[in-house]
Amino acid sequence: QVQLVESGGGLVQAGGSLTLSCTASKSISSFDSMGWHRQAHGKARELVAVITSGGTTNYGYSAQGRFSISRDSAQNAVHLKMNSLTPEDTAVYYCTARRVVNVEGAYRDFWGQGTLVTVSS
Image (cartoon, rainbow, N blue to C red; front, side, top):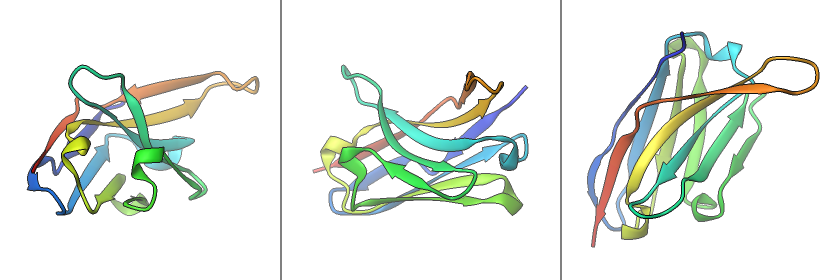
């Protein structure tokens, strides 16, 4: 069973920075991609950032230019560096991992429990 454990959430003032970390119970090399999603109160869950096993990154619109995702294979971890935070970034942030299971592209997603980020104005 894959476990993803997030850390680094908390309270930060607007304009500040925060780094989230996600540690996997399996080697992150076993996943085709890992990333972060978030869900604000009363809103739909949205993509924040994804990084593939090859290092290619993709960011959601709200994260472009402010957030940076990276991976650390030695620690089986993925990090999300968030800069210039605004109250609109307040949400529960979830670590995700995707594993393709067959040649047709079917996949299985794994999710962490989430970590709360609160940005005060």
